[in-house]
Amino acid sequence: MMQHALELARPDAPPSVAEIKPNGRTRGGIIKPVTTQAETGYSDQTLWMIAIRDDRDKGAFGRLFDFYAPRLKAMILRNGISGNHAEDIVQDVLLTVWRKAEQFDPHRANVSAWIYQIARNRQIDMARKYNRPVPEELKIEDRTDDDADQIVGLEQETDKLRTAISNLPDDQREMVEKAYLGELSHADIRQETGLPLGTIKSRIRLGLERLRHELKELR
Amino acid sequence: MTMSDIKHHISDSLMAAYVSGHLPHPYAIVVASHISMCDECRSNHDSHLAAGGSILTSLSAATVSDNLKNRVFDLLDEAPPAEPKPQKRQGVYPAPVMEALKGKQPKWRSLGMGVKQSILWDNTEGSVRLLYIPGGKAVPEHGHNGLEMTLVLQGAFADDDGRYGVGDVEITDEDVDHTPIAEPGPACICLAATDSPLRFKSVVPKLLQPIFRI
Image (cartoon, rainbow over all chains, first blue to last red; front, side):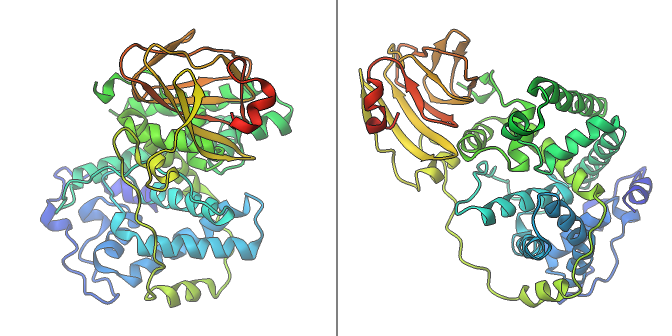
């Protein structure tokens, strides 16, 4: 679906800001689909999240839930957390998405990156008694309108990143996956795998170097 | 000094460990503080998050219980739990340091020779502290177990590996014995994290180290 969205997302003339403002939606939950992927170039996820942020749209939240809840649960299960507890964390993450929706800024992070960050933070905060240290928020200048070019540009770049990850050789892709899913720490690597740390690190680095190289070509 | 003067950054493997949440807490405070000061690493951090988001999206869906969605929807209109206001940067201390200080100014304890420390966090995961080194003075020579990360918040220091100014992070491994010397001028203030207590070689005899907590 994402792929399809991006195929559609190459308008010769980017949509004007007026066209993408969610002004056609009714408050209280139901989307009137005046804004579509084809018009905006935004992915489904971004459209849902903007509707949640600007209109507190529960219909859009339902769609977002259906997409992310099973994937979030899959991620949390890979950290050896039991099914019931994993669902408690999924619930907490998605409630956080709803409650902190006003912090979602599609110019700086795509929806999956934003939810990934919330999920990693919440999973740690719930496992420990203290909060994970997070960087100071950048002061976002008062944005009254979304800049469609910038948002679509970030989405396309992220899509290329996803393709680059899936095109990695299997062993590198698995290592990168393990790193981002919290299955690797420096200490784990030292103590448990019996593999030389340098080799693992260089594999991660190789994967990341390739990703960065592919990203650089986009700029 | 502008932030573009930062020359020593967070490596990709550390950044991946940080975004995945598996970096021990003391190091995570240093990484979050560095990102707060360094646009290059903030952008790199965002790229790593994008990679994490891509992997999240690519996972095969797990089956969720039928009632999970209802449970979540039942809570949407409830008032969210009150959360403490996030700390802001104060002076040379970026927000993650102010969080660790709980919004208060550091409580310095003397280590002798004008060198002071303020312990922000100390438990089995390791320790993180602020170090205050008067200009021209040396931090007592020390080795340490495991990785040590030192972020400069004010002034500068130099050791065998080079010069470190505001925003720079020095990362040293367990086999390194080093003697950082603060540059002449204003005192050097650093944020230093290890996964175990520092072992100072001089100044304080070993037996007293548990008392001084160094």
